[in-house]
Length: 450
Image 1 (cartoon, rainbow, N blue to C red):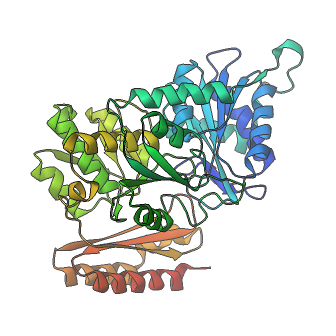
Image 2: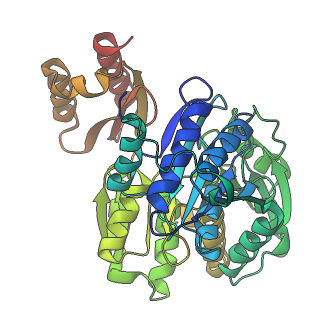
Image 3: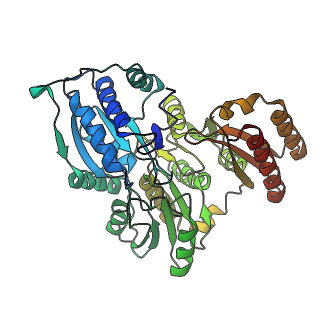
């Protein structure tokens, strides 16, 4: 068996790769490792709207109970809500059953520690080691040693709602907001919070049926949101992904404001308020060159990390930076949250918008981004590493960089969750870089595809 944990927990096709048996074992091993300092550790479990969520939730719960752990099931709720609730309930761990932006047939299991942070690699390795070696921690407990389970969905949702409202100090009366919840975990809570703040909310992607999560909707598919904003002449559109840790904004003209621009706008607000700690913003290698220029012209520095919000957070904790994130819409406001939170991010954006007295398009126009093309090459598992040493691929990259003459860049990286190699090229001529990216993807697929 290979490594179970990827860049964001354990993921796979539900009931095929991510089976109830694996979920049960993850529950036992996770509770044993994360609760080793307490006899009956308390663990919070939340999930998104996938049809496989119930199956995995019950298997995971059974594993935790079997080793003496206690469970609070908080039901369908955003990933960042679980990170918050772990601290609120003073639990020893939290678990989210979600595959984020992936299609409904996939699911995932990711853990948070007692402080609401995603697990360090060393802790994941301990959990993984127990499963791979077939070690059965505290197996076959009986009687009062077994754990108990509580249902806490309604109470948990209200606690999270109050927390979200505490992060914003402006009202949204008179504003029309189109809100796309991807038929995912935020479909109840996000519209409610905006209504609480006085906004007129027009929801889309708020009718989950177990299989329509992320189905051509949400932060990775903003087309319907763009159309609805235009049709309704709305002030703004907000899109989350399936587990609501991402945000993509759409301006009043129906144009996308991506994570890079959102971070820039919010960083400017923090700097103007004297709250941009260490005068730093944290971003990943995928962030646009235009993003770097804007932050630097603002008089701040950019710390660059590998792709993945866990790496962004690690860098923020080391540097003391309070805002960081990814172009995809994973944004961390460290003064409020221990992980990316789409709702918190949207509320901070709304705060910046209201304070500016301007329209979203006007704020976004201040940041000039370079055209950026991302193409996926489907490969085998081995191909995700072999391409890195392939002389033909390396030479193709050199040729592209020579053509751009320093006014652009090429970035190739393997996906952490799918059998893909992602090719990103950035430059001034979108047509030219699109052609180059596709050619490079075709080359990698032809050599390392299935």
